Image 1: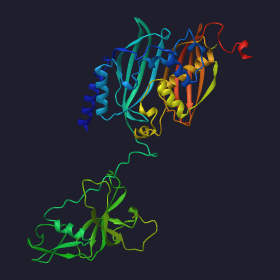
Image 2 (image 1 turned 90 degrees about the vertical axis):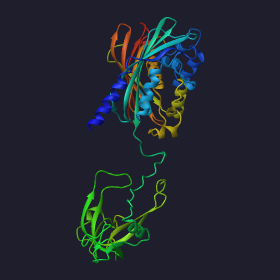
Image 3 (image 1 turned 135 degrees about the horizontal axis):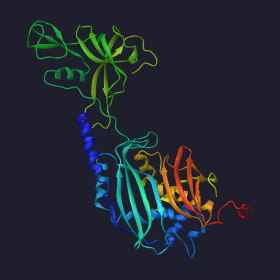
Image 4 (image 1 turned 30 degrees about the vertical axis):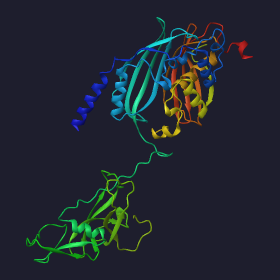
Length: 324
Length: 138
């Protein structure tokens, strides 16, 4: 935890270092102020103000930023510091951008033919903020626009670089459900999992003293004997104990769910899922019957073989609405 | 023109055409303003209006009211609830302060999901050109 805080502080310090650095130096408007762009703007805004047309036309003052836009061919005069800052935020996962504030002052009217130049500085980079859109940093720039030597207007602009919260509804890029965690198979228990794959639940039996054991081990706890064979479980069991898992939620699992310690009719105990009954109806002593469940997970490139697990279904008459 | 004057509301239907036309007229080719699918991938339910268009509409609201001789001095806006296609934004305004021929107007643009824009506009209106004068009311 304290390590994470230290990392965050370090990152915020790096962001703060960009304050006061240039965002654009000696940028030039791609087009001079011109009547066609003014007319297209007025058409879009349905703005019929006669001041924006004719011989003596001025550009709508609120077009100020338009004259600095890069368009499809990109920005000119954009300073390295600004691209670096945005890149840093991208890398940290704040990949989306939305404009939040625009403050403009208009010092002299712009007229067709005016050639715009502009300089821009990074005024501030906020600490991390959580908004309705997601968590991110606000970046504020201030741009001075000139015609020749004359300051024509100033433009303060704030964007939020953020990590989006994905909403439901609408076609989205479908995330494959993460695969369940896999059993750890080793030399000592390989035969057990091979049995499960073939829908047989095998209990280890010491060939020296006949004691049954589970989980699988290299030697006998009772006599120390190393040789063993197996007996197939009858599949009858009862809940010996259980827990209900609420938190933390693991990908691929939908809490709450019950995890039970099942006592098999043969006397050994094993951990398993109880199915066919809601998690809050699992009780000590509940009679269960073995079943094998196949998990055929799609988009699972890591595990090309489907997973088979022994699960335990309640004995009592199937209830409607039971959790499967 | 007096402090406390309310501007008549202006209803603006937020069409897909307005959003796209406004984005292109402002040379803003960010995909979230014209490509619904990419907008959704970025966590937005649809395309939404860009800030330059909102800025332009706020400016138009003020100059429509005060007339062609009105000169915008300052426009400061903050965006909140996005303008998505199919919604309607209603702009309202109130004169907060008058200093000679210059007024400061508080503007609100409300849509179906909340406050799209809040802002302050400073506008100079040459004497005699103020709206609401009897000869204009006719």
